[in-house]
Image (cartoon, rainbow, N blue to C red; front, side):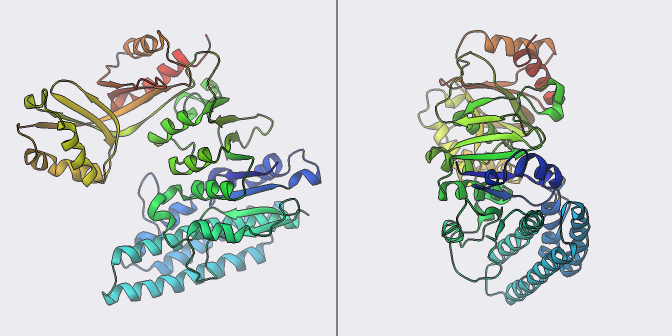
Length: 468
């Protein structure tokens, strides 16, 4: 059995546990192989390289954008990475060799960034393309660092590990992402070498242009498809659970156990980091199952995601959502009976690259829930002006910062679940501002006031997922 396995940044920062629980565990020497590990950068390293994913705190990339001294930024980063290295000395990392590797990689990056800044200053090329190239170069450093260290530790532990560097720092071949992955895995005997792969892959199309910070999962997915893996495994610090343990408490969560790709799509649509939507789809099409495991509970089978699974017992599997969305309402009395009104609205949304998560309509109103980001704000600034040019009426537009809470399951198309969910919110005094559910009945979406998000998730998880 050949598996491709992804290890996230939080788990990588606790590599001693990864070594004991995931890579070695109770395996015999022969059982160590026929596995490929795609690794993320250590926790916070990509934030330091680019910008903090949640707070927006600037990293080296922002220094490059603002013509700051990114060279000093990289020197400061080098010391942070060397400090990380020290934490792995006790489990076999050769600090001298590891220091030499990351120092050389950072010097290579400095040279490339210097060349890019000179080209950008000439004014002959599109600055956006240069900036995206710089972002790719910087992002790749984190995964190269963690992957190289992992191979060094494993080799020093007597395990035959191979460093698969997809960052392309040492070649100038104009390969696509798929071509580079195909080339990297040719003629490898997986029964003799444990492959450790950088989560970043260099390609002519630019992996971050298409996927931004979700690129590690995309590499993971593409590698699994390339080698025709029997199973794709994601190791995380928590189980895929009935609700976010950070919101409801670990003791109040239940591992999902089994679900299907339809539910995985629902999770991806609300930004839950189970797996990137563009990473899940190739695996689904290749009929490769995904297993999500808890790094720190190696004996637990985790949650298996397959194409055909439907729970034999009607039940809610997951309560999830986001408090980072906007509800945009368009009200127009002239909308009644007007064929194609929503098409005109969606054409404007598409023009600004805004996709909706939920859409609810009545005779004269359309409500859409979208991500609260710069694209949606840009859309809102001109939506009224754009709309009056293509419709007959005088539409009124309002927006509100809201939260979206979703109740999901592979077998919930029965009376009672909607009642229980609504009552759980009612009992907490939480009004449902808008609601959505398709005929497939796998996901009930509740729009609520943003300030009630945590309370709503706790209430729904308690009522629908925790056995009384």
